[in-house]
Image 1 (cartoon, rainbow, N blue to C red):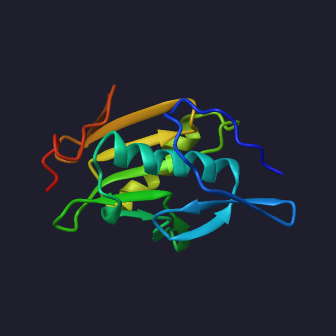
Image 2: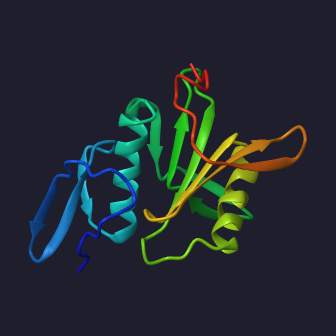
Length: 155
């Protein structure tokens, strides 16, 4: 059974429900309760933080979108779109106990080889990494802070 741990993210009023010795958290994007796993705890914090702090509209967020990679079906943790429908941010979340390693960055890079999204976010709720991808120069740059939705002119 998962016990929520404090994260390096602002707290938010999570709606947690207990049913038959299992805990569930309400996902505001999918509008349903989901089994509360360590990764889901991180994801729900980030969804709230991206919306409240960075002004990314919830209506432009999609959780666990499917993609095909080397004939395998994969699921991205979170994709955010701009108002024109283009993908602008791809996020990969891990449980707080999972170290952010090169393997995690390879995973999101592989997903992004399909998506071609300019901003990447990798977090285990404790450590957070942000990258800006320059597809023309074929390089990436770690950035210290994500741009807000309005600041980046994603509209």
